[in-house]
Length: 254
View (cartoon, rainbow, N blue to C red):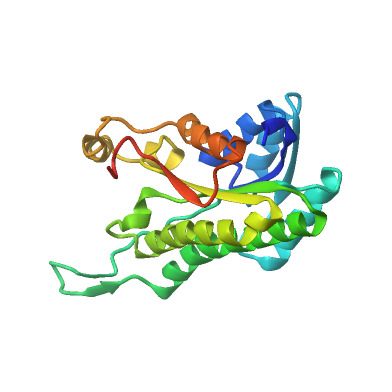
């Protein structure tokens, strides 16, 4: 599909990767519904892009079923009754070891159920709800379309991220299943698994920590949001791509 044919929702759009995706989609001629919990960030994004193309905004928690239903309906209402794209980008971290023991006190620390559940809710249930509602709209209205989900290299397992790794691995598995289930309706799916990428989260790291991370990447640098966007753009535009995950990680998982 061409970018200028897209009536597309981007979740987690107010900052980081989602902001980059939204900017490039709008500039490419897509009609974009930018979704986030950060109302101020969405307002700033719309102000920046409104003269460059078509952008609307919607404040929603992607783990809330009623809000997701309202998001998809608002997008259809704004864009001539049509939704044919989705980028599942919204995500959170709540990093913690499963179990650890303090060397000083002997205290046993455990990942809390709340930290586990919050990440699963946003990073896995959120994409499930958004994909279900967008796919239902496409099938009901006979619209061909594409759904892209942002996974992570952490899907293979990353120390301190039992919750995040499980969510991102589940998202890749669902991407394959959804491709098989939705192909008959002309709906494609794909996932992108970024490695260490220049976002506000990475920018906040100490220099020595960042240097250690980069030393383990074969290309010896972090990625840029635009490089992740290039993979998302490929999935959108390549009509013979579905059900696969593209790693964009500088060779980290080779």
